[in-house]
Amino acid sequence: MNLKMGITNKIFRLLLLLSAVLVNNNLVLGQDFINSDGKEELIVGANAHYGWVIVHHASFRNLITGHTRAFEVNIGKQTIHKNSWNEYYRYPTVGISYYFADIGNPAQLGYVDALYSWINFPLVRSKAQTFSFRLGTGLGYITKKFDRVENYKNEVIGSHINGVMHFNFMNAFNLTRQLAFYTNIGITHLSNGAYKTPNLGINICTGSAGFSYRFGKDTLHFPKHRERLPFINKKWHYNLLIAGGAKEVVPPDGQKFFVYTVSALALRKMGYKSSLGLGLDYFHDASLQALHLGDSNNIGKPFTTGRVGIYAAHELQINKVNIVMNIGYYLLDDYKANGAIYNRLGFKYYFLQNLCANVTLKTHWAKADFLELGIGYKIK
Image (cartoon, rainbow, N blue to C red; front, side, top):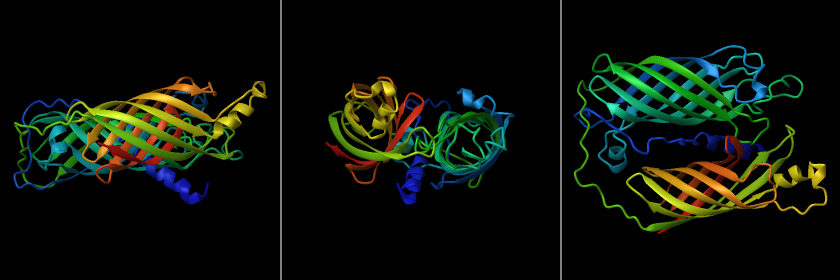
């Protein structure tokens, strides 16, 4: 696996999780506002974080020696276009953030520099305040990674570059028509998607507070929803997907193994945002043979690197992006150590009407299996 492909794999992780999209049913109370001249307004802000790294594995117990302190700078804009997705999600804000954190052990874990894009969905909005859910994804650089000689006690992160997933709940109080004070509580997750071991992932839980300033008119007024929403085509649609990736298994700094997925999915739109469906997967994972042979009890036993699974699918549509959340069950699997259940989280981007780029992370519960990079075709 050459360096170029490795970097490409990591770059695609920045988009992952536009995932954990928890806003399938946004609730908006009160009056909606936006500026009357129809321009999307620039919003800038900064906030300070304080919290801790969640100790979800024994390897963390002696690594975390202090609390997490972080700083964040945000640049965003307020969507106001009268198109379907803006209306369905009550005119969210979108933007990009720079995030810097001391994660509690500079000597062995170092510091985090991250850049991620986000979308902020209003849940409750009034003239005085806005309560919202923010979801972000991007790239992070961790200054200290595992090293056999110089940093062997760091058994949690094996790469400098990692994907970032960030989500929080925010409450913004309008101090003036343009200045707001806001508080957040949320989680920032860093992981390389099993491309490099070790890869336990780092989960940072923090509370934060800061200020934002909106450039533009003094008065906001959001357009009301249309009385007649567009017709929903609830016919079944069919999707074909081919995706591939690479992964590393223990021991660290070992061989990279090629993996690929072939998937077929029947999907039915349930409303203006969500679709539900049922699919069938075939996985080829060359690393399973090495893991199988690594156990002396398996010598001489028949084994195949192919897996077949059936899965339930949920997709949430935001403009040209579909957020993918699947849960599956292996029908055929010779390697039993991962259990029978698998999950998939990520997105599809429709750059043509029926053709999409796919970036999803396949996992076994909270443990990353591999990153699926591929292309899909929708049959109407």
